[in-house]
Length: 133
Image 1 (cartoon, rainbow, N blue to C red):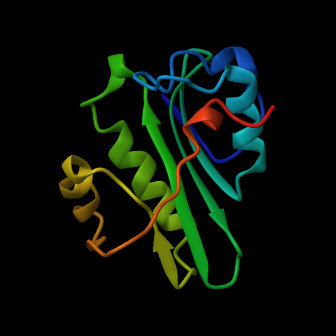
Image 2 (cartoon, rainbow, N blue to C red):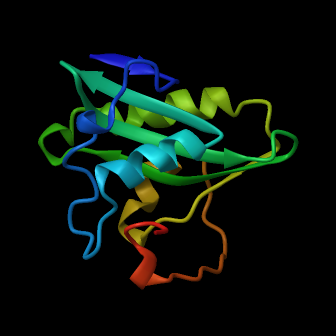
């Protein structure tokens, strides 16, 4: 397995199987676009298939937000998500605040990375869950 912080050598065809359980998941083309437009990415790649990824959006001065961390279901529980998170935190080491939102059941996972629970607000346009047209 290889971890990469760029899209060099990555194609849309390598992005299948993500967003499992989403009622209206992004297509591989939309997934490719969101990776391109992210400030930071880390990918886990095995045999010409992306098996996990994490993204961050940043102002490159004070703040960054981690919107997505996904590992293909067949590869979950192998430490890939933890490695993606560690690598992203290292990439964002010079940023004052690194934030993310997660479901309650994921809180223990993120606490392992010294993240603390806080209050937050969200707005979801579920009809746009598959990306902008």
